[in-house]
Structures are given as C-alpha cells and as structure tokens.
Image (cartoon, rainbow over all chains, first blue to last red; front, side, top):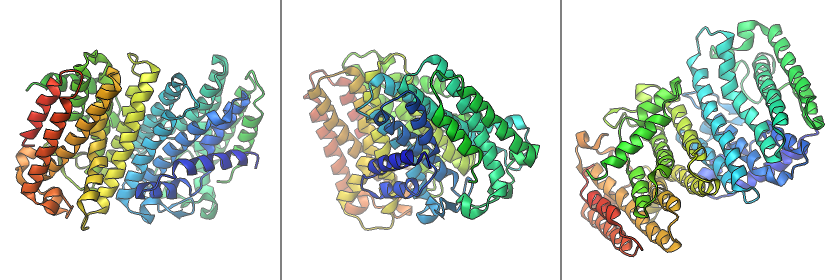
Length: 283
Length: 283
C-alpha cells in the first residue's frame, strides 16, 4: 500500500539499531522485528513529509516511538498483565523466552528508545530536547493508562473513565508520533494545534475501532487472540455503549480528524489517505 | 553523617517530582521514598561539588539516576526475577501492591527519570543532551547486566564473566552518577578520565563488598533477606574466589580509587571521605 515505503524504511532503521550483539538485544529483535503495522512511525513520517522535511531527520524519532510501543506490548503481554500468548502471529516474548527476559527486554527497549534520539547527529540539541520532552511525557502517560486499564478489570466504569484510560494508554503515543513529526518539521503553531486535534481524534477512534475489531475479527487476521478483552472482563466501548454505537463513534471521530486537517496551511494528502485506510481496516 | 545533607536534599526533590496524583504515582512513591542510601545522588553531588558547581543544577540528574535505580530494584524483586519479598525493611513493591502494578511503576519511573532531566529549566539543551547520553546508555547497560545475572544462575562461570555482569548491572549506573556530576561541573577532560577510573574502581568494589555482606550481615541491618544470592545459586565473588580473597579484592579496589583521586586538579576531600565510609560499611 501507499505507506509501504515508510514501513520498509523504519524496519531497516530498527534493524540497524538492534544490531548490537548480546542476548538481550536478540530478545529485543525477536519482538520488535516480528512485525507490526508501524502505525506510529507512519504517522510521524507522514506529518513531517507534509512540510517537505528531510526524512533522515525523522528516522530516530520513528525508531524511538516504535521501541516504546514494542516495550509496552512485551510488558502488556506478561502473565501478570494481559497474559497474552500470541503477538504478531508468533509466541509472545515471555512465551518464546521467559518472563524475566521479557521484562528486561522491555526495560532495555525503553532505554534504547531515548538513547537513539539523544544520539542522533542530524538533529541539534534544542530540537532533541523538544522531541524528548514530548516522548518522555507520552511514555509516562502510557504506563499510567495501562495501570488504569488493569484497575478497571471486572469494574463497572463510565465512558469518561474509559476514555481517559484510552487517551493515556494508546492516545498519548499516537499523538506523540504526530507531534514528533511536527516538531522536526518546525511547522507553525497553528498547524501544530490542528495536527493535535487530528491526532487526538484518530487516537481515540483507533482504540474504539480496536474494541470493535476485538469482537468481530478472526484471530488469523488480528494476529492475537480474539475476544481477549471480553474474556478478561475488561470494559470496552461495545460493552458500555453498544456495538453499532461504537462503530458510529469511531467513524465520527475519523470524520472530525479529516475535517481538522482541511484547516492546515499545507495539503494533508497523505494523512487524509491514512484516515481512509484506517476507516476500513480489518485488523 | 557527613553526607546527610545530600540525602535530605535529594529526598525532598524526589518527593517533589512524585507529587503528581494518580494511583501509579502513589506506587512509585511507596518504593522510591521508602529509603535507600541514595549512594548514586551522593556521588553526583560530591563530584559536582568538588568543582564548586551550583548544586541546583545537579538535582534533576540526582533524581533521574535514583529513579532509574529504584525502577531496577522494583523489577529485580519480581517473582520472575530475584523474587525478593522485602526491600528497605518493608514489603517489596509487588508484595504491597501486585506484580502488574510493580511492573508499571518501574516502567513509569524509567520514563520519569528522563522526563525530569529533559525538563530541567536550569540546564541548557547541549548539557542536557550530554547528560541524557550518559544516562540512557547506563540504563541500557544495567538491563543487559541484569539479563546476564539471570542467565548465570546455577551456572559455573569464570570471574571475568562475573565482572562483566557487575560492571553492567551495578557499575554502569555508579559510573554514570560520577559522570553526570562531572558533566554539569564542566571539568577538564583529564579530571574526567581520573573520575572515571575512580568510579569504575568503586563500582566493582561496591559489588564485591555486597557479595561479602550478603554472606555476613544480618537481615535487620541489610534491609533484605540474607544469603539471598547463595539461596538462589547465584555465582558470587566469595563463591568463586573465596571470602577472604573477596575482602582483599574490594579493599584493593577502594585503594586504587583513592589513589586515582589524588591526581585530580582539585582537592577530592569529599570523595576520599566517601571511600573511607564505604570501606567500613556494614550494609
């Protein structure tokens, strides 16, 4: 598809940063290079590209955010957390290795995420600090969101708490991806706010859609076990507001995201295309 | 003792950074503020202070390194890792809360460590990037060291691998503390190399001494279970080279550290005093 060049690009950079020998690096490679949609890097590349940014300057941010995402998946899959045995159609990290190595691989990936950004020789210090400010905050929010997620298992929660949880757990890192691209592009403050509206809308839409797909998509397509949320008694959008209302909700959010992009000072072609792809995704 | 003002100082800053409400912050507070010798902050403050540095500029580094240390203890204590139930004379994090919350509190602390450094308004961007380069690398090495540590349980290893493990698992962060202080102090390259010799020597000495204390000190003093290494069949310096040889080894390393400091362009008073305190520590 149209975003394949970005996926290929970030995969080759991820491979490069994980070339370090050592048993921990091997475990990190297993999880990071197993696959994944690379949605966060695509968001960062697309955003930066709207403003004709040199994409070489975006590579480290894309790898950093993917490392944070990958570490969160490794830790989320642990028996003490979501206890998922399959990830990207292969045994999850703690099943292939063991729990201790999975915890450490996650820990190492978080450190590596910040390290690759800190050491990018193509960016000046001021830009790197701006990027790191965004990324460290999003990484912290993500952990907070996961803590809320675990605390509401078997609980009756209102839609407001569910939304707060998703905004932190998933939304923070998706918004961060757009913010990183915008920061490197040095776009105007107005464009930045528009991009934030866009990213917040698609972040929530993406999560509601995930909840819907968790009910509807077959395991072979999803790459993980179906009904995993329902089986764990986690509150979801379908369980609180209903399935068809959830579908309406995420489609409305995608539309709001698309409308926001029309206000940008540049043509948002690639990001509009991305919304269209997301609206019809089946996994 | 002489270093109490540094301990008081960093404790108050740690408390400040952990004032954020939310359940995850509460768990982080429980583990970080429970106690601890604050050895790494003391090293950073003492190093910076040799060169008459404004200590306000060192606070964020001291908190960052203590957050990294605290997260590593939380994760190390997990059942899948060292399975320790007591830490700082109180239930370890996963015993007081649960495993999932302990994993996330550790994850959050690592993110917060980098976040406080990134957002320190007293430091310029270039300095912050230098500090972050040192700290992210040490954090990664620490995770690698812990992975080696777990891989050699029940194994017969040579002293060389044991040393490599300790250099990464414990030494990297101790050296980092000195490096952070030296970076903020903007001392000469020669002084920096001397301080690196010092920190590498005390880092290894400290660990060999820990192995010895693990055999000899009673649990009330140690703040954790005695014989924890031996019970887990972990190779240690006493188990490989003998108890009295281990004592000789760490005392020689402390002496080498002291000798190195005499080459500094400034008086190393506080660091020499620190070595003396370390040589006679009982926990």
